[in-house]
Length: 360
Image (tube, rainbow, N blue to C red; front, side, top):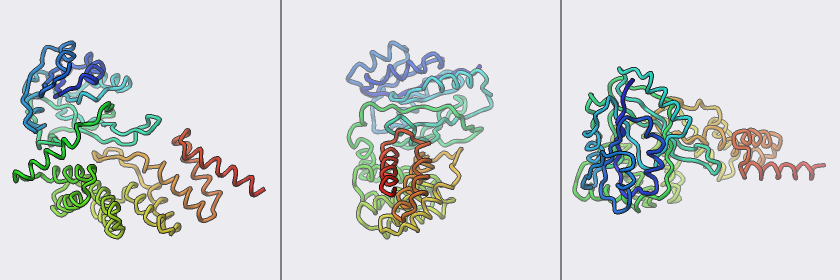
């Protein structure tokens, strides 16, 4: 049986660390905690699970801290988690079974990372992340922020999921401050960091800066396909925030040069035509989104609602506006099969029931 080292970097995680470690303590063979400056009870809580606790001076570099944590590992494979991650019971069972039968020729195991949820707890955003590494290969984290390990060797996708259950928001503008510092010091940003820097600008409402860096990233021609598509999606939203609908639409169509159309892109184009009341054109794009094949093994962001629920709801609205009430009701019923208790679905049902009464 393979052995696992769990390596974590933490700071002020007293509200989440115990919850995380309880879900993994009986699966891993050692737990290594790297504390980067906690002032709460984080280290005290960590000591209930392990004696392998080390201090690391924070230098605005997540890779440096993670590489230090990896240097302390002694088992066959290294696993990493953040303090606000958990492994749900179904996935705990899968991980235990996987560990017991693991082929030691495997170098990296990718696991799904569930990070977005709707009001009912249904996953709305997930993506694969490199999660288990063969220690003998001496894998190294890259980039000071939004760090990653380049995947090489025998890499497999697993159906085991890690669930991100954030309690507190990250320190305000923490990531953006690191990127700004890198830019001010003239440090080159890797293509991946250009992409994530643009996303930080976007999520902080700095749309002009976001547009500049998304375009730098895309124009570099060095981006990963999935990041290129995501950049086009976010770039279109930046232009929309600035009321530049023409540039927003161009950004969406730009994504088609990288791969077959994605549902979220088609829906955004559908919204464009819906907003200008060209419902037939909107129907085309929402219908296309509905009939695309959802990626299964892609390592990119998967926005699950765009692969069924959202296009069905928008088809419902467009058909209704065109007077196609039977088609609209059918779309709403199909959306209800995905989200039975959704407030929008229930509202539409009531609307159509009243419409039927009026028509009698």
